[in-house]
Length: 309
Ligand SMILES: Cc1cc2nc3c(=O)[nH]c(=O)nc-3n(C[C@H](O)[C@H](O)[C@H](O)COP(=O)(O)OP(=O)(O)OC[C@H]3O[C@@H](n4cnc5c(N)ncnc54)[C@H](O)[C@@H]3O)c2cc1C
Image (cartoon, rainbow, N blue to C red; front, side):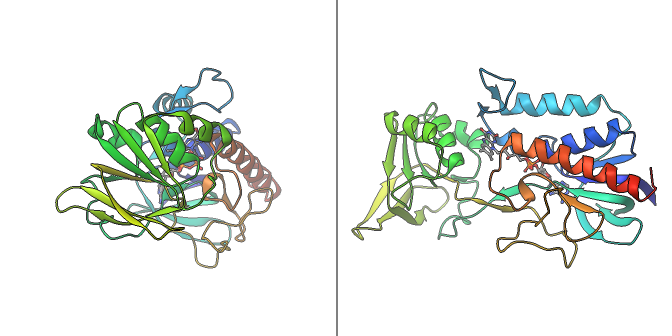
């Protein structure tokens, strides 16, 4: 069984930063990513609020720059597979990657989040047939057409602004009167002539046989239900942690995110969490990068005090 000082689970901004800091301290490090390095950044059209890029940067470009930085440290062992299980042990934890077990003295979980389903009839049935959770991946299929966007947070508004450049019309459907998104995104959506905002409204059903044909929208104040013809529906109604492999007994908050102390320690000694998967308020690239650096620094101190460095 291969042994490492530390294993980092997830190759998004948090995981790549953690691996970089650990490698620079000459620890033996494994970085595990089940898809492509970059995480959610790869699904983001344009990032305007990451310092160092005053004109903004496309998500895929930022992900590529992060990945190139990691490539400069060939000592990092890269695994392109999924972590399926962690078995906490005194001394060294066991981690199952695909069908291979490895051992690591410290584990940093940076597995991020996945987007939630809204849970309405038609959503599951029409997934990939007009229903999407990624504007950047699928927006192009709807050029010149009408689409609905469900949600009211940063992602919903940011992605509506991106879609507005491709599609004919967007119905931005939000169940509350006020948006949760940052003011700058709200202002831009409000003046965009391709975006019609439907507040205090919910989608009851996505209509269609082999492809999306319409949404049934209910106004929560008046009770009125109307059918709006659209070819696509983009869902951005929040996120949940990418788990399934968290060790039994690890403390989670009421929504399933990993609880840590301010030094990124979880309730299990030698296991840490960084980035969006952690229970916290702000989930952004900048905060994920900060978490990755902080968690790696705690791991370095932990291994030093254990006399293992
Ligand atoms: C549409 C959209 C727009 C956004 N816009 C902005 C913005 O403008 N500015 C900004 O700062 N932030 C933005 N964000 C948020 C930002 O992208 C995230 O906060 C950031 O990527 C979190 O980084 P992370 O490393 O914690 O997690 P993630 O980026 O989610 O990366 C986690 C990685 O872990 C991998 N993984 C998960 N489980 C396993 C497993 N079991 N085994 C192996 N690998 C696993 C995943 O494949 C993924 O690559 C946006 C996000 C989205 C989706």
